[in-house]
Image (cartoon, rainbow, N blue to C red; front, side):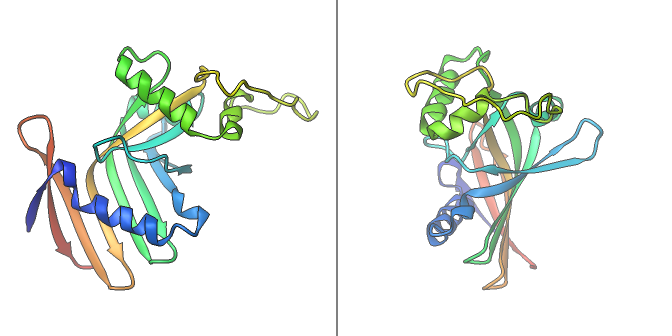
Length: 201
């Protein structure tokens, strides 16, 4: 059993290696995000990996603040990522807390993060946030009007950044038949240290 500093979480390098070795597959940047639904049952969906927060192990996800997952996270701010890499046969289950950063966030530094995430996504992706509210019934059978957006315009109201702060990671490599468990604990100064343990697959 070994401990390591938060800045160098051992699972993060495994994940970066998996992303690199699977980079030729577009689907390698998609993973499943499970939350606790308002009815107490699991709620799961596929989202896009938008990178790590600078200098940390926190994972960024862009989403629409009008989706059900926002209310779910506000009620229970916990989620689990399940990420499988088809080329290297690796699975990561990443459990942690989720921070919601929308336009009403009082922290100016978090608003800067949100703006950076907005401009870091494609114009086509940004246009999705101008559409009708996700999950509601269609009120018209007519094709929706063509949406347009000035590329220099900042985040629209519906755009939201989710930041997942991992505290447990389960890693499984089916090629090597290896499984590792990573758990974190506070190191006393607001950071985390990680403990890794080899477990049965």
